[in-house]
Length: 83
Image (cartoon, rainbow, N blue to C red):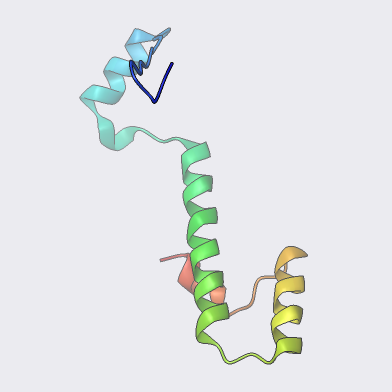
């Protein structure tokens, strides 16, 4: 393939009845993987907003980042990530 020419996407449907049920009632469809991905994305946005909009000293910033990567989310971030 050169320069993206001739792109194709093949979809194999193994359970037609489930796909029909989703099409007929899309409001009942849930995908837990997508829900978790969305929640993590919202948390990341809230965390970055918290970092950029706060006036942390260098030491405070490193403490916040270290806590975040150790799984401790600041209280100010958690409500924003639920929105």
